Amino acid sequence: MHGKNNIAIGFLVMGGFMLYGFLLIYLRDFAPDKQAWVDSYSSGKHFEARLAHVHGNLFAVLNVIIGYLLLHFRERLARTAAISWLALTGLLMPVGILAEVYFGAPPVLVLVGAIAMTSSVIWLGVSFFKLKQVNGH
Image (cartoon, rainbow, N blue to C red):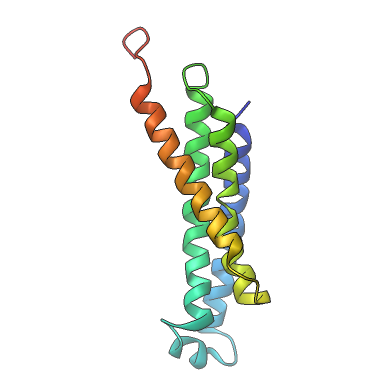
């Protein structure tokens, strides 16, 4: 059933990035070098970490929404498997940002994830434009 994994993984990823938010709060308010962290608010690792946190939660919510819609409209939408997999692949974007911040990884995961999520959202939007009404719905 395409969509179920999007919902489950979406909630798990959202929980993970919410926990990551607690780390960011610690770094801002309680870490021994918190002032250096605060001073780098709009640049470097601080900015990238916040970017990963925001996009991780956004892409997780998008997966929950996409998963719900795929389940609810599975009989009337084409290519639900492709849309589902693209949305899940989109989660590579925030994970890729974290890999850049903490491991110096190249931005390939960020690009792949961003393209995949954008593709899934556009594809689903086009699919809904093509959706035929059934029994007034």
